[in-house]
Structure formats: structure tokens, C-alpha cells
Image 1: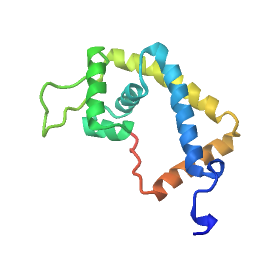
Image 2 (image 1 turned 90 degrees about the horizontal axis):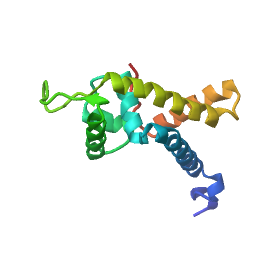
Image 3 (image 1 turned 45 degrees about the horizontal axis):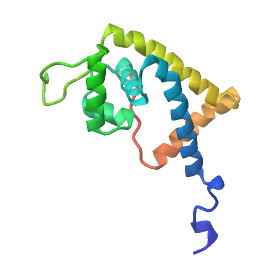
Length: 153
């Protein structure tokens, strides 16, 4: 096996660099959301529901990158806080579509602003044109590995 067939030094590994960036982003998001008493998965569910009301548990799990079981717990916690509502019975099938309450929408505005500030801080070293290119490059890399993108509103 030649050296070109191995990952090589971690400092040269794209995967390792992405994982470090993701860990740094998550830590900064956790710190920004802590005063709002939100976790990153809770914020993700609020943001997803703010942009796409009525998502099912399975759709939220995919969009928030957590398991369905974890999403159930997240949604229960958000419901207990009066931030999300779900019907008692499924309107069709087994899915219980979730929606934000007025309190959920209000908290989402604060949380989304806090997370956007973290993203701006992360992208600050890049010129504006490079920031857009960076997003496009990440999307292309994701598509190359066959990941589906959660479609916007």
C-alpha cells in the first residue's frame, strides 16, 4: 500500500478538519444557546419547525441529525415548555405533525439570532465571496457522498 492510499497526517485530512470545525461550531452554538436554556438539538427542531411547520418526528430527526428516539425526547421537552404543540392523535397515518407556539416563535427569533452570530464569527476570516464559495463547496462535497439536503420552504 502506498502512502497515497492512506489518510496520512491528521493535519492534512479533510475529514479531520471538518470534524474539528463541526465540534468548534457545536461548542460555540451550545454556549450561545445556554442563556436561552436550549440545547443544539432543541434549537435545530425549533428552526426546522419555524421554516417548515408540521414536520413529523421522522422528518425532524433527519433534519436535526439525531435519532427518532432522541427527537421524541426533544419534542416532549419543548412541548412541556409550551414552545411546540402536537395533536393528540395523528391526522393521518402515525405521524404527529409539530408546530411552534407563539412562545416558540419568540424564543426561536432569539436563538436564531444567537446562532447566526456564531456563524458570522466562524466565517469572519473569509472574504464575502469566499464565504459563499465555502457553502457551495460544502454542499458539493455532501452531494458527492450521496447525502440528501433538507429542502427549504
